[in-house]
Image (cartoon, rainbow, N blue to C red; front, side, top):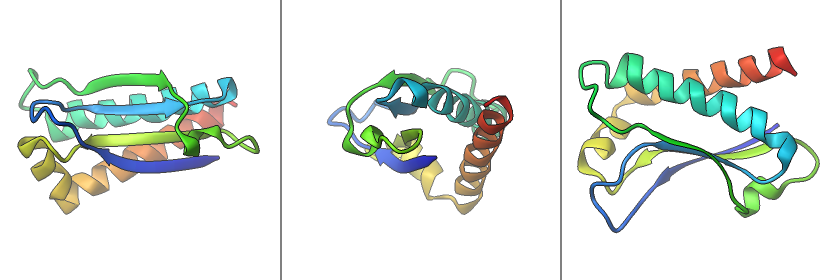
Length: 115
C-alpha cells in the first residue's frame, strides 16, 4: 500500500475536517478504512468534548498524482486544515499527532484484515 499524508489548507479559515482520496477503484476500501479510523479518533479522543465540530469530509475519488499509483492501493490523507486556527493548534500537538498516526495504522490493519 501507498499512503501520502498531508494537512490541508483553504482560503476559508472556517474549513476543517479530515478526508481521504483515492483514484483507483481497488484503493477505495483502503481510503474508507483509514478515513473512518481517523474520524473516530477525532470524535472519540481529540474532539470528544466538542460534538459540534465538523470532522468528516469523506473518502473521495480524485486524481491526485500520488493516488494514481498503479502497483498497489494508494491514497492521500488530509489530517486537517492548517488554515483553520483551532485545527492548526490540534495538529501542532504531539499527543494529537500520535493519536492520528495510531488511527492511520489501525485503519491499515482493518483494511488488511478484510482484504
